[in-house]
Image 1: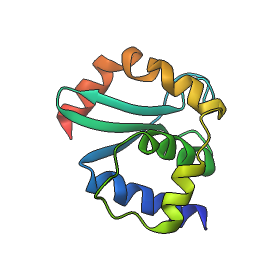
Image 2: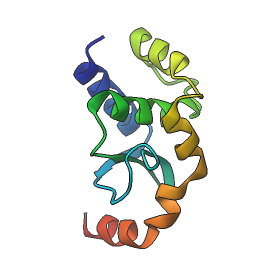
Image 3: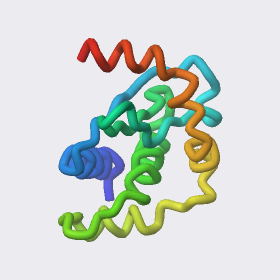
Length: 116
């Protein structure tokens, strides 16, 4: 599946789940701070380091969505296959699991989220 098409499918799925995807430029090394799932109050976000290559951005979103309950949600078979194959040993998974991107940028993110 084409990476750009997969990205649009994942963005649509996140939207359907009530999640906002934010592409932010992080001031740190891209592999150590790729982004991931973040909650700010009741609002759910997937934050993606926009400095990552497109395939890595897709992986970050896929890893964030992989652990969301998708029961009862229609997901195209090719997208579901991608989510099933998104591997937890990805270098981006380890950083995303730490939630550093959310904790370290919480104030900046809160301010930018309130402006949107």
